[in-house]
Length: 264
Image (cartoon, rainbow, N blue to C red; front, side, top):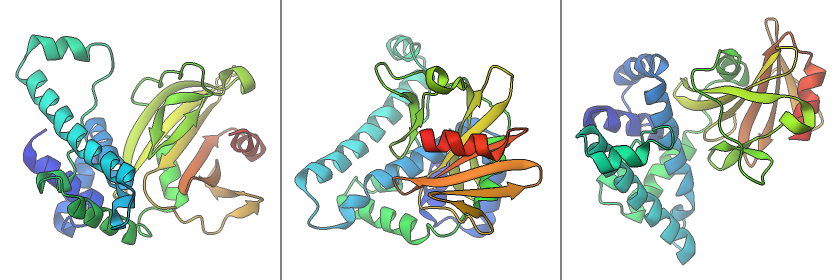
């Protein structure tokens, strides 16, 4: 991935990419899981440092933000070594799927906390924009493009998360097992989906949207959950730690989705 693309991804994530460039980049992201994954990393980075907006942020939080920036630079350097064919780096990468980290714009500014906070402020002030739940659910209904995440040892979650919100491990308790995943950009918002399948071959997409909550207008409330209809798809949405979660499926009753959402 070249530097110009990295800078454009950073600008898309923080809301400053010009409209004409935005449309072109979104088309590229839609065709490239690598770019979609990199956009999600941009959202992760900006979310992680939102606490630095406060000048009185604790030393621990500020240290975490600085560590995040240093980690981004380190990952970028490691990625560069792999591209140049260094044997040691390539060997270290064999044990896990390769992920590209799109360097936060603030790191290019020298990693200052003020710049990091400014980027986070832009992201959250623009967070109300983006797709609706019904629009984001189309990504959850699409077939997987990547393998399923591994199960976290000793945990009831998978080794995948959006802004710290992890995906559940359901196989033992409900019979729904993770069979694949995908990452998309929908109207500029990164959406990660894990696809689950039951013993009958039915599939459900569990999507989590990066950033602030999405709109679920015209849905029917069921306690903490909202059921949305879109064509012949059943969609259930709710908030976990301030993030929109979506279960979407065709050929699966909304009551099943509500039961799974409540289990989560």
